[in-house]
Image 1 (cartoon, rainbow, N blue to C red):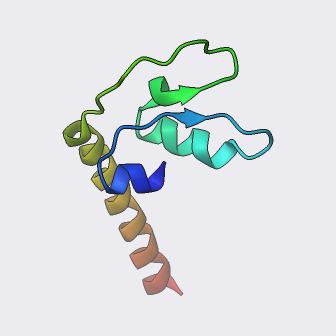
Image 2 (cartoon, helix red, strand yellow; image 1 turned 180 degrees about the horizontal axis):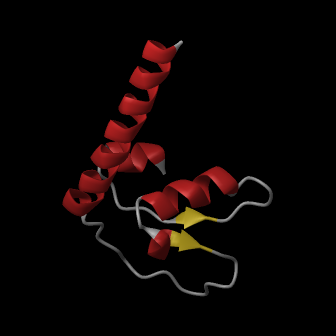
Length: 76
């Protein structure tokens, strides 16, 4: 999923037992829940991801992370 986002490729994310927490978190943060597939999904339709919109959110999250790290370094 991460490489698909970096290289702007369309993708689906499939549920895996016991390791979904980080994936679900990223999917939720980026607001791309429609691309997360549970076992109950019977048919997948072709998708086109709006990477302009996704990258706006991704860059906001990167900025938050950079600010958090900067503050942690300054305060330590």
